[in-house]
Image (cartoon, rainbow, N blue to C red; front, side, top):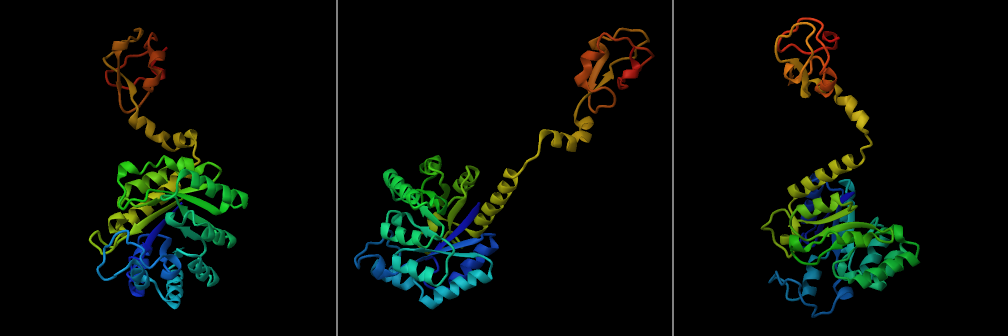
Length: 333
């Protein structure tokens, strides 16, 4: 299992800010950070509309892509910085041209495909040709298209390379609309599954991990009042840190191979403290046949355990016994 911190373009085109996001993610315990590489002319038309027209700094979406995209040398510096921090650099290539740059410069170990490109066959075919693992979000593809994607990877003997991420492409998505059970549909055919979150809440990712998601992608923001179109869909570093801690605990719990006998042995010395023993409820003369009213059942066990009380009934006392003393087998005939 892994947590991927999606930084995307929240750095606003500043290499320094991008590095600070890497630092935040690293401090939160994340081992993978993800950016997005937008080459405006290779990606969209000049009049491509904004999803959210959040900035009056950019006249068009292409202006925005140009402003936030790094020079090639800066991408290399950013990838190298991630390596020095011991964190994997991942970058969504929004075009074949972007993918070629990332691959030919050996900057990525695997690919992330956003749901908007999940049926972009020229891009998918290039990514598959590199034989690097691929994480693919499914928010903007239909069930039929998912089947086509699966069939494509099956035909190319590449099922092991693909992880399908359940995703709902609303920003933010409502909790009641996440429908995490759809991960089960993605699994069919032997595919690995994960979850790409846009809720702005830690709870869906916790649920996805518990259901067996292998990769969780969450957007990261330093504060809930930060600038950018994805803030409402993002988690803060301290929330991601909690998610990482839960994931690690879950991995430990899932790896458990203990048996009931092992656990019983470990706690056997606590049994007398928590279980009830049998005590005399009154002073009793020798040779009396023991009745239920002659006994009290109290913690701790100092003689016979309450589990054996029926074996005591009907036996005779072989000595004088006093109230509130424990009942022992040598008190009985």
